[in-house]
Amino acid sequence: MNLCESNKAVSLEVKNFMLNVPDVKEESITDYLVWKWRELDARFKYINVSTFTRQEENKTGVDFELELWLVGRKFHFPLIFQAKKFVKQNNSYVTKLNYPKSTQSQLKKLLAHAKANKKLPFYVFYSLPDKNTQTMCGAHEISDTSIFMADAHTVKKFADGVYGKRVSKNKILKESNPFHCIFCCPLTQSGHYFASYFSALTESAEPHDNKILPSYVNMLLSGQILELEEKETLAVINQNELYTFRVVGAYDMRGFEEEPNKSINRTR
Image (tube, rainbow, N blue to C red):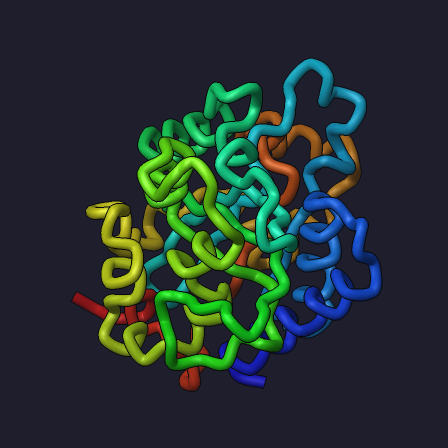
């Protein structure tokens, strides 16, 4: 499968999982997502950091759900995610985005980390679309997806009440895009996907040169990190402060002619 087809297939798997296990929490959906992604697409490799740091979580905490590196031949994009499961049409979503206790601490940490480390901050919404659900990109069928993404700056507007004190699931999803659109949208062919749909990300939406790709990402891409003993893996996690993420993944998009995202593989 090409990149677009592969990611559509992953989204459908996650949707079926949510339909069959309606009470599943965000953490378990993320675990299922990365497991299925790896199973369906060998270009994706990941490490579930939480399985190595579970005994230390009370000390360090897990601030972010996922760190994802999209790596092309010359450039890459580092994305970080928080995750929310929004299924009901109305369910105090503004309050949930102000977590915890109306402090927006979760959201503020995401934005601060992204700014300090030049990463793209997103919320991933695990949701089940209905016949009235719309997204920013209207060109793709969304009935078979369950993974939506909105940039954290837009999410903060929802949390701040800019869109009202009570907002529906569909109101939030209308300001998002399906995750698979990264790999399917025609705008990626001109290198304008992130900048066009998530303009609040400004300069961070530009691709990063692979010369500055962290060593642990290269270890993921090569599969080396997956062959380490537990003690060695923990050393890599601690050295790179990866314990703030539940999951760290890298998607190897190098050398694939069918790849639609020219913003990653383009030359300047």
